[in-house]
Amino acid sequence: LTAEHYNVARGSYGSIEQSDLDFFKSIVPNGVVTDASDLEMFNEDWMHKYRGQSKVMLKPQNTEQVSKIMAHCNARKLAVVPQGGNTGLVGGSVPVFDEIILSLANMNKIRHFDPVSGVLTADAGVILQNADDYLRTQGFIFPLDLGAKGSCQIGGNLATNAGGLRLLRYGSLHGTVLGVEGVFATGEVFDGLSSLRKDNTGYDLKQLFIGSEGTLGVITGLSIICPPKPNAVNVAFLGLESFDKVQEAFVKSRSHLAEILSSFECMDASSLKLASHHCSLQAPLSDVHPFSVLIETSGSNSAHDEEKLSGFLEALMEEGIITDGVLAQDETQIANLWYWREFIPEASTKAGGVYKYDVSLPLPAMWELVDATNDRLIKQNLVGSTDEFPVVDTIGYGHIGDSNLHLNVAVRRYDDRVEQALEPFVFEFVAKHKGSVSAEHGLGFQKAHALHYSKSEHMIGLMKALKRHYDPNLILNPYKYLP
Ligand code: FAD
Ligand code: MLT
Ligand code: ZN
Image (cartoon, rainbow, N blue to C red; front, side):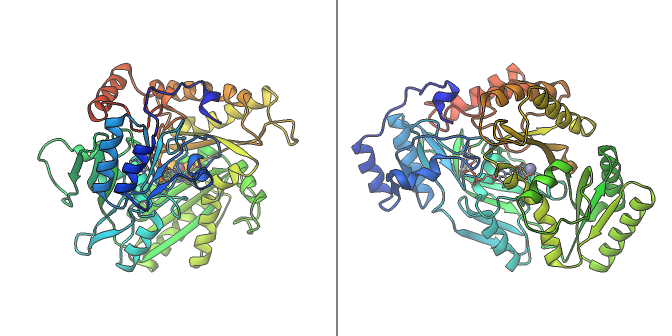
């Protein structure tokens, strides 16, 4: 879908001229992409939902080049969209009109690692999987993990403040990131690559970059504190009869597994059925239960952790909290169990497209929303197994440990009737329960207009003032983030 479809008008930005291209070539001789077919995949988002028409992508190799590019764009009022791995799920990483795509892909070096403190310093364009692979050779891991790790970049992770699969154990990037190097819209360099754990000398300005989705500045480097690689990892996959039981299991897992609990993920039967429809792997349990939970522990002593986890599972079974369960016996089984959780986002797009809602809600209200959404779409006659119906199914999964639900409506094609059935319905439900309309994916293009469901007029006013201060010509990621 293009800007026209969403009734958005192009801002009064400059258009690229030959003199701009000549300037960019003088700064990044091998990093100016103008071929339309080369640009295609960078103009379209991961969900194939949003498409822009950028004519230029720039691929700088260092911070100085980024600074020169931004200073030029600011002087010429050329709009820019920073792009990492383009795995974002809210249409934030692609242009809306003809914004210049500023790709971080060529800034992909590990700069330094200190094995004593565990602090990694790296370029923003390092792919998350590569950062984690490198750290593992040093006996450490990256404190964030998510399904898009093979493509997303650590700078993109900071820009979206990604949460991922182990936030309940390792915390948010607002806590683990120790330093940021960035370039504001004006070209001014923010030299904040500290590696100090504690530093109370003034405002914590690096936080402005984390979660601001490329609207204030471009992240070019970062330092982050990384945990040691756990010696023992165990994974269990459980079947449960109701979401009440899921909540009981969660409460018990926190007290029984305590410091070794590293993940508590949940998926409903529709999610698993959709995944198994598109996957040839054997499902983890013989039946598909109304709810499935994946529990991971990470610790230092495998005998101790295994004993703790199997004792915990026995207790859950005896108390009738779980109906069935399996414990992975080796690394392949661990990977297979994780696959069933991590494959769901991809499976949800297979029929053609997906409407995604990533919300924070109090746990008891979570599946009320999934059921209410499903009922609403069925009542409006939008759901069916044949091509005449746009909706394939409504699924729910998410990070129970963080009170974060992913409500997904898998569709055969994007259809305004579906969008109108979902919005503002989902946002109103979330606001009524004092939740957040974006728990971890961000606002981007999709949710900028829904910000007021989670933030007051006063807060939005403060955000706009910050934006005007750091980006006076509003050239960075326009049409997104702020209403
Ligand atoms: P992009 O998609 O390229 O960009 C995302 C936003 O950040 C855009 O607004 C862009 O302008 C901005 N940006 C990117 N790089 C920079 C930079 N260097 N400086 C300034 N701004 C920048 N998210 C979660 O939180 N948890 C998950 O578990 C999770 N799982 C996912 C699983 C899959 C299969 C997919 C496809 C996505 C998932 N996501 C998840 C979404 C998540 O936001 C992204 O995967 C990731 O954080 C984005 O990184 P990226 O490099 O692809 O950024
Ligand atoms: C996930 O938890 O799998 C991600 O946030 C991606 C998604 O919701 O699709
Ligand atoms: Zn998620």
